[in-house]
Every structure is written in C-alpha cells, then in structure tokens.
Length: 184
Image 1: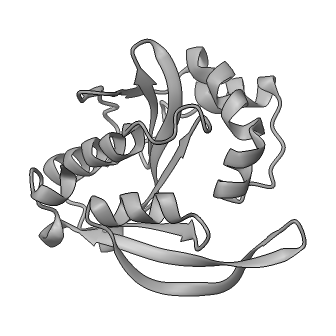
Image 2: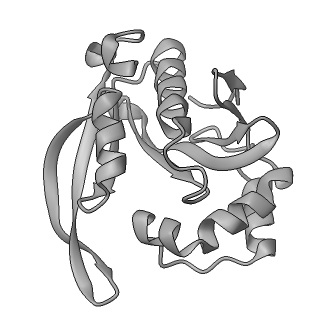
C-alpha cells in the first residue's frame, strides 16, 4: 500500500522519504530526554543503529517513513505503520526533534499532509494512534486535525517509576475534511 514513497510539500515543512542522510537527526531525536518521555521510548539507539534503521525503511511497502524537514533541516519524522490491509487501517506515529522545534506548526502540517496523502492515494479507511495522557500539546494537535478520542489504555506506560495512561485516537476516511476550519 505504501510502495511509493512521496515527497509532500507544505508551507512550513516538506516530508521526504527517510534515508541515511537523516540518521544524525534521528539519533538526536531518539536521545533527547523530553522526546523520549513524550513518546515513552525506552529503546536505546546509537548512531549506527539510527543509520541502519533509515537505510532499511525505503524498501518496506507496508509502511511509510518520512522525514519532516523545515528548509534543509531535519525536524522530525512521521510514519504510517502497523498496516492492517484486511481492515484498511494503519497506525500513525510522529516525533519532533525537541523543544526547539515545538510550537511552530510543523507537526500539525506534517500530520495534515500525511492524512491527505493517505486518504487520497490509498484505500485506507482508518488511521489510529496512541498518545500518552500527559501529552496535552500532542492531544490538542491530533484533535485539531480531526482525530477523535476513542478510549484509554490504563497504566500503559511506566516512566520514572510512575504509571501513565495512553489515549487511543483515530480518524476515519469519512471524517477527513481537508481544508476545513479545524486545520487553520
């Protein structure tokens, strides 16, 4: 479903297929303490692992991994993965580089571009995600672009000795309205 890896351009960001040239940005992203907390990532990465990861994403037709760039700078990644072709569904994952790029509209635009592409060029009916309940900024953005909260997975993340809930959200093809006021 994602054999073609597009470049998607917006006003603030351009989404490009990930490659080894983005590995240093990925390494910075996955080692940033705040990004790790917001994504709940316990995984350890080194530079070589980041490079290998981005080297192998392009040939995977069951997923779409795109680098989020602003100008020529890597500012994050957005991914459609966990493809369920029988149910025309997949998962969305996004991570921005850190606090220096938060609040600039990069995430909102990247999600809007990916949803528009996915619903216009594939048969997908449902795109879902999970977000930690404490991540109010991300939950606001997801709602703004059309995701609906469906439920809560209680105590889904153990971080620094404390349990945190995870909120499941989705957007359906029938709800996706590109150009509506909520995207402004």
